[in-house]
Image (tube, rainbow over all chains, first blue to last red; front, side, top):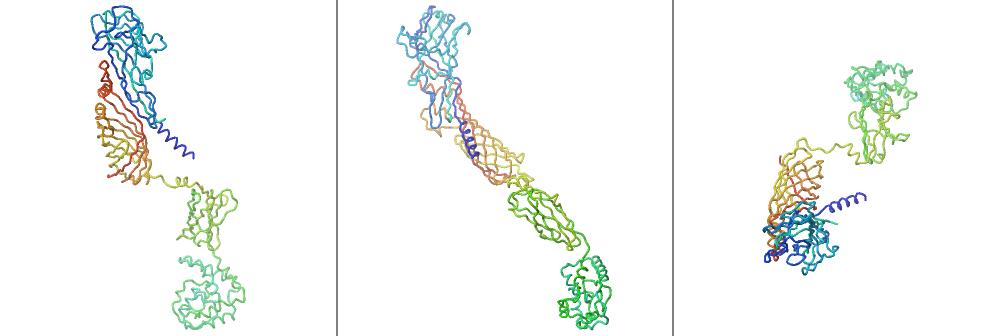
Length: 202
Length: 428
């Protein structure tokens, strides 16, 4: 009797240790804040910044591909699939033009917006509680940025920020300091993600 | 009886003895029938020295008899019944006479009539001759010497064979095993049977082997001398009676490989998800096998190696098997129906490394040929090209020209049950 239980435990333990996992430590999604047709679309001119208003909107949308198991925990037969998407960091790279840099920025925050902005005056993150901070830059601690600014991740799993229907993430960027010198400027936004999907026997 | 018969058969028609004196050298005396009758139960000693010794004793005994000479009436009655006997090979008598006084001689032995002799033998003596004759037959000697290797282990419920060697000049009688369960007071007697020569054996029944047993041996010679003992009632031998498995382990030597192992062999196997393979086997130690060879998983070829531990060489041998290998680039589109060209490109050149830990049972000879079944866990690790992953992901968002993907190399890992079967042949 005890031997049978022991065998069952061994078998169950062995099965419990079975899994399949796919991971990629670095998947970079790069999104141009200004579309090629609009070229430079963010107001600059050395004015005080509050948000990056690309194309006149306070938010921008980044599509995340419809990769498998993107919707978190999911049953797959007897196995349960758990997916995590870690945000390693987020960066802005200035599209080169004379005198265009991020030296005037003292603080930058990448927020997850609940919805897309409809115009220059529509700020979905007016109430900060609706927009968790995903990444942040602080000149005092991170140093003065030039044309490349890195925002450190503030979240462990970005999965909850992805719209499960259209697989998009809507961002809003708030900033303090002075805007780049050019009247209009542009930058490429890049998310560096770590993906992991693990299927295990419950 | 034999001595007397010999005389009777070899001396037909001889004449009556001339004197009434006892003729012990031929055995044809009044006391001869009873002596012979007694001797019938006694095996002959071949040694002439023993015969002389016996004769000497008989002489002494005969002289000690108060009625050593039969009365004339009885002697005459006997002699009258004996026909005349010609001289014919009296020396064939195997037993020497016990009394030197002699009636007849080798040249003129006494006649003997067998029927008459029988009558005389059957006839009860009028005097207590039989008693004195029995006294005559009491022999000297010593109890047999016992050589015995004690039994120390036995299996519960199985009979216990006890063997010993009894050696004595005067034979062996009443060879006995006295045994009891440990803790009991009384011993039980178990007669030992002659197993040829001086060897004797007895078997304690299996039903008695329910707990530890104490025993000793004893035996006397034919004349009642002894008993001599191996062990004794106060210091008996102890047989530990164990459960069968313990007894087997203690009494049977561990399974060992033959003196010369086969060192090199080949093996074939197939399984899931590891595919099949052909391996070369090398056995540096009898319990250790190393293997290395090529593998095929239907998608492509690879190579692998490992080791197996076989703790015994049994008809069914359990094994622990550790293997590792790598499959080179293979087309896994054979296993999946994928329409996305980027996904097909990703699956077209999959390679992976694996390691397995399996327990197995091997049936057959470890020395030459066996087949096996193994099961356990396998670890797989595969990497995917970042370029392929980038293409795969980018293809899904091709409609948005403002977003680009760049993926690093991906990794797939898995721990899964594995099963394999195969056979192996050792050829050298």
